[in-house]
Image 1 (cartoon, rainbow over the protein chains, first blue to last red):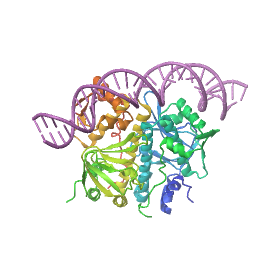
Image 2 (image 1 turned 30 degrees about the horizontal axis):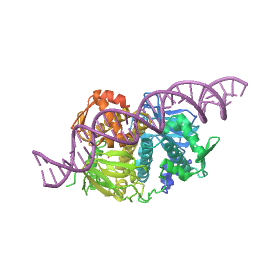
Image 3 (image 1 turned 180 degrees about the horizontal axis):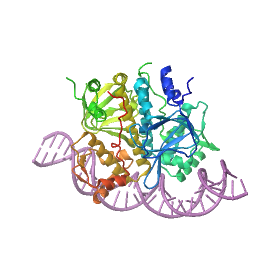
Image 4 (image 1 turned 90 degrees about the vertical axis):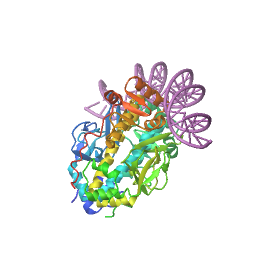
Amino acid sequence: MVAESCFAEQLSRHLPLTDAEQAALARLEENPRKVKRGAVIQRVNDPITELFVLREGRVMSFVILPDGSRQILRVYFPGDFIGSASTIYTRAPESLVAVSDSVICPFDKHALRRLLEEHPRVAALLFLLSNAERVSMTDRLASLGRTSAKARVAAFLLDMFHRLRVTDDSIEDSFDLKLTQEEIGDSIGLTSVHVNRMIRQMEQEGLISRTNGRFRMLDMERLEDIGHYTNRHRDMDLDWLPVG
Amino acid sequence: MVAESCFAEQLSRHLPLTDAEQAALARLEENPRKVKRGAVIQRVNDPITELFVLREGRVMSFVILPDGSRQILRVYFPGDFIGSASTIYTRAPESLVAVSDSVICPFDKHALRRLLEEHPRVAALLFLLSNAERVSMTDRLASLGRTSAKARVAAFLLDMFHRLRVTDDSIEDSFDLKLTQEEIGDSIGLTSVHVNRMIRQMEQEGLISRTNGRFRMLDMERLEDIGHYTNRHRDMDLDWLPVG
DNA sequence: CGTAGCATTGATCGCTCTCAATTTTTGTGG
DNA sequence: CCACAAAAATTGAGAGCGATCAATGCTACG
């Protein structure tokens, strides 16, 4: 009997996997570890030999600048592959902290090497998904570089919403972000004070509503317009990948 | 006799390639095409079936927001692999324009598929380099989200400088950027007017100098400090890749 | 039930944008 | 090689968005 694999489940949403491939992916998740909210998983500049699959909870990656300000680089959700960015570096370029109580599955760099070597189709898929992430990162770049505070908040909420929906089919139009306004601000380059003003304003305009921490998207169309948001989860085309 | 391959040369800086691998990479560059400065190589939302290797010149990728402002996502140099970001999409998520007269080598998506399939080690290498690019993109995110105009200009100049040096050994401390101040601004989220003020200021402070379009880095240390810059080209560790 | 973290609101400040004018450089055709 | 036009760089003045500083309310958790 093979352990449930979050990661394989995530990948198979894009491409049906063979049993051998699923088994290989499941092996990456053989050592689940619980971490508490706020726990540091990886510190900048630490030597790294491990990667992770996130099974439960929320994890964020970030850097701290010399003046003490923080830029959150990415918020990870269950099924996400964490730390691939650091496959090429001996020292961590970013810190990892659990935003909520989480379960992570660490595995060795060398396990990834074997996977890439033995399963070229999975390697190709990972390569493509890595590129997809880069595209969504360019969306954020454009957001930070060229749009107003309100647009950034709208785009951020939409992005989180759609990413959560990929793995959680129960989400209709509301979701639990589980991030403080300060964390939102640190993700999109704003102060928590201004994030609050923007959220409030969007609430008054009937774009969103909040009830005990849950966001509800009331006017998706106008939100997409304000945030200049494009949903990249549509339009994906992986048909040309090697067949199993 | 095999055509010179820019791309293979770039990759072999990280990992010695076998003859078969080099030949496979060279095949991607069998159809060089000249494009003039300003030429549109790819337009947003166009259906895409091709990728490119840049052999000569400069190419940029960008998006235009509804209000007309432009965010430049990346500037490509010779040896770079262009459009990998679009491997998963049927329609281009970004535009590509030649910044100077260039030579590009288009090749079909399916040629990439075959490459990934037949040369797992190259696939693994591409996966890693794609992750390296993501890391450098996170550096830009932090720069845009959390640093001042002057810091962004300093970091941008350093980044361009170090990237050019990777393929051009003749570069000592000065280089030809070949970008207008407006293009610099569109890369780092500033107006051309303010880019100009920052450059001028840095010149007066003896950090850089300019003579007919060439930038010279006079005080690298202070520049790195001002821009919060970390050189990611050091510290790469690809030793654990499958051996040839 | 007390305390710490988070959300909310107000007042003020300053960095960067906008608008506009001028100079300098680059490119092109004669 | 020069004349002209177009593009790019430079400089100044003024405005606005989001930061900063500061105070208060709210909520969860031990």
